Length: 366
Ligand code: F6R
Image 1 (spheres, protein in one colour):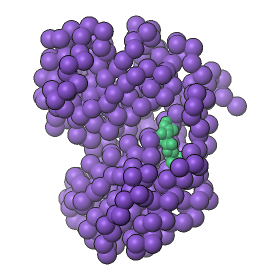
Image 2 (tube, protein in one colour):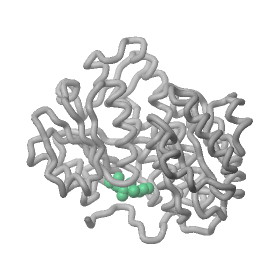
Image 3 (cartoon, helix red, strand yellow):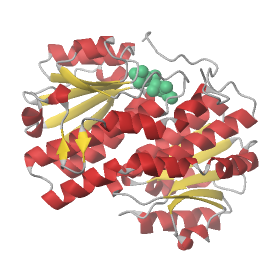
């Protein structure tokens, strides 16, 4: 049932070209320039007029929500807040007419997320769900939603469910932007063809598995890690850190790269590995100077870069080269090497990667 893989997590990481493809199948067509999200058909127009979207989620799904924040703000020009479900539900949240509250949950059973959604419903918000498990409690409670169709995820650490959540968020954001007229036809078509190209590009990234395993061997005994990224790849840094701590039990922190100078830089020395997402996007130059700051303090740097970026490659200890894409879509690519890095480090440390200690696949207690 692990399909020849040593662990479910690895199988699920390698399934991503297919799971991302399945998530888009029948929904996104780059040739005809169409996005059709059956579950949202009656809500898209209203979503395009939304004053505010609040994402509620926990853990990895919360990170997907943060990616969604960048997508919806940039493409559809809608105000977005991303809330930990457990915090949202114990405040007295302000919900106004026209607000959308969108729950993101792989299992659809997370107690805090479900309760946050119930509260939002009581307060009159339109509630939507982005769930993986069909017929789950959250899916049943919502007014409408979009399933991620990633297939069953067995590994406790979420991988393919995360990329499917981001795929759904990107599709909704692009469709909303199109309905709203906040992106022009050229940009719309470019986004669709870049989305359609993701499965093939993920396939290419997975070929780096052996190289990433080699890098992992040199970091197996690290006791700390920092992950840095900016813009839409800042949440990818958070997710990279969470993945590593969950399965390897190495202490790791994710930060927006520019925050480093406000504290975390004090931690940098030759024993501190720092993972940068340094793809060629609008914050590239700034991230490059952050890399220089880490190197000047003898930190060991692993960087996710675009193919052929010799500038950063020559600056860092290890470079992992991924294909270029539209900036708004890079999280789907940049997160893959980080999953593999965590996986290999955890296996090398002898951890039970599919069933990490103290964690459950579905958190139905608050
Ligand atoms: C991380 C992980 C957890 C879940 C969180 C939310 O790898 O698995 O952080 O993401 O418990 O779960 P769902 O998405 O089922 O609501």
